[in-house]
Image (cartoon, rainbow, N blue to C red; front, side):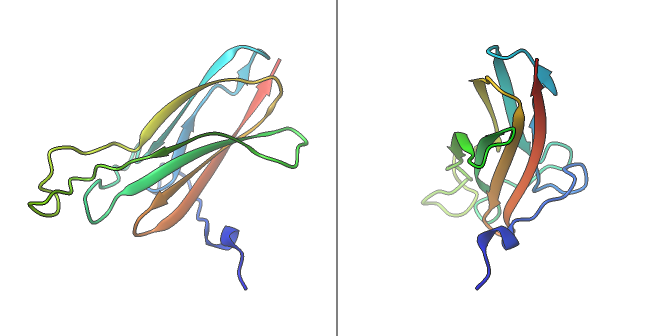
Length: 131
């Protein structure tokens, strides 16, 4: 039986519209508040239609040397133009970008995962070093 991680895809977000692009400082001061933003479709826009959309973004932090991840946030996108009138006839659409503010006490790696209703799971990561 395959493991779920065998289905997670990754690439450079500048080449692939499904990869979550992480924007966070490479270095920060321990204990300071840090903003982490994740966007899907930063350079190549991802569709946000009833038929093809990003369902959610999750952000995790893994402290250096740790064996567990800490979920910083999970964000669901629920409005994709659906309506009783039909697909893409609705009055509202969500965009797959989020920002979370966290206080880190140790260096580690930020992981972002996202789910496209057609193309599955995608991930990216970025290290952050604390002084």
